[in-house]
Length: 190
Image (cartoon, rainbow, N blue to C red; front, side):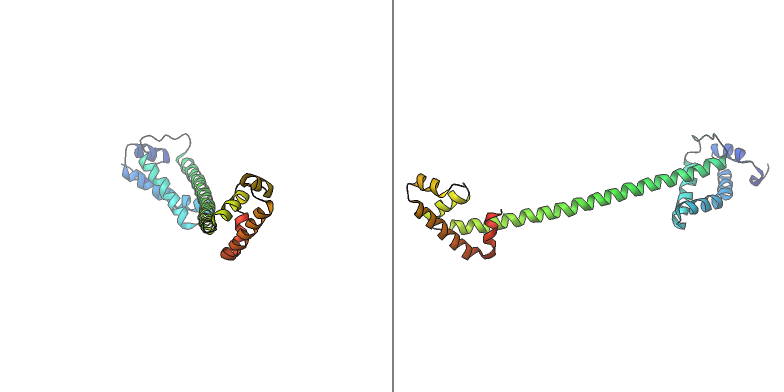
């Protein structure tokens, strides 16, 4: 039997298909360095280049019984490195897109959630202060503030003078401004 170094690539590949480990080791010995240098030129990272070569060689062994060559073994291996590199780029792009989109989601949802919680808390404070107004003042204020009724409409509904309605609204605003401070202006924004 002749030494493996003297076999052609085609002969080594045929032996590989029959699970010959020595043939695989000879293929690895012949092509590991040229594939590594080629991968280094593609990826510009030595560790990644070594990983790509390792992946290709492992894949060659794992698929030895189902792989067929349409070109030379050398052409097959170099093309496999190039495709593996493109797959890596695609995975990096998908990973980066995922990270970016997830970060946007986190940034937006956190802000949105914080705002919703803050708005609810502010509304509770405002509602508590409105609830503490005297009953008649509170009724008139809410008709104006929440129902958006005019002074005339409120006076007509409650059968009181417009001046009384206006005084009650002014008094409610004064009390709320006093108790809410700067939050008072949020009353008209929220």
